[in-house]
Amino acid sequence: MRARKKSWAEREISINETLVNDPQNYKNRWREYFDNDRPLYVELGCGKGRFITESAMSDPEINFIGVEREKQVLISGMRRARELGVKNIGFVLADACDLPSFFGENEIKRLYLNFCDPWPNRKKWAKRRLTHVNFLKLYWPLLDGRIFFKTDNLELFEFTLEQFAANNWVAENIERDLHGGGRPSPGLMTEYEEKFFNAGVPVMYCEAYKNTAL
Image 1 (spheres, rainbow, N blue to C red):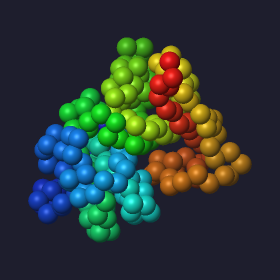
Image 2 (tube, rainbow, N blue to C red; image 1 turned 90 degrees about the vertical axis):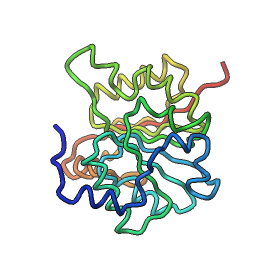
Image 3 (cartoon, rainbow, N blue to C red; image 1 turned 60 degrees about the vertical axis):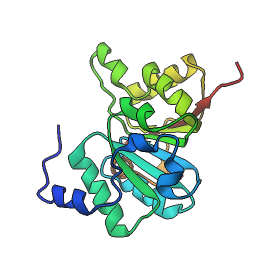
C-alpha cells in the first residue's frame, strides 16, 4: 500500500538539501558530493529514514546514502535529517535496480538491507526479493565490504542464506533470534525492529561478504 500524499511534501523537497538530484552525476564521485573521501554506507529501502539518520548522527566519520523508491515515504526521512541538522547524509529517490546508475565499482563499503519486502506466497515473486541472485549480481561489483541483513520473515531469511551460499557469498554472524532473551540490538534499531522487539517477535540477522578466493 502506498503512503498517503503529504500536504507539506513539495515544500520539503524545495528546501531540503539532503535530496540528491541527478545521482547519476555522482557515480564514482561521491567524495565530491560529500567533499571528503570517507567510506560510503548505503541503506536500500530506507523507509522513513530513522535508521540511516541515526546512524549518520552516531558516526560522523562515515558518509550515508538512503535509497527509497516511495517518494511520500522518503520525504519523512529527508525532513528528519534536515531537522536534526545531519550533514553526512544524502537521500536518493530510486528503485534498487537503478543502483549501478549512480554507484561505481567498489564504491559502497556497507549495504544495509533492513526488513525488505519478503514477497511471499507466489514463487514467481522470489525474483523481486532484494537478496535474489539477480540483485546479488547487481551488488557484487559495487560493494567493497559487507551486506548487513535483517528480517522478521523466516522464509525470506532461509531463502537469503541459500542465495548467498549458491552465489559465492559468505554469510556469517547468523542469528535466528537476534533479541532472544530480551537482548538489545547490536547497534541501532530500525522502526520495524523496535516494534518486533517490543512484541517479542524474533528478528533474524546475518552479514555477508563476497568470496573472491575462488
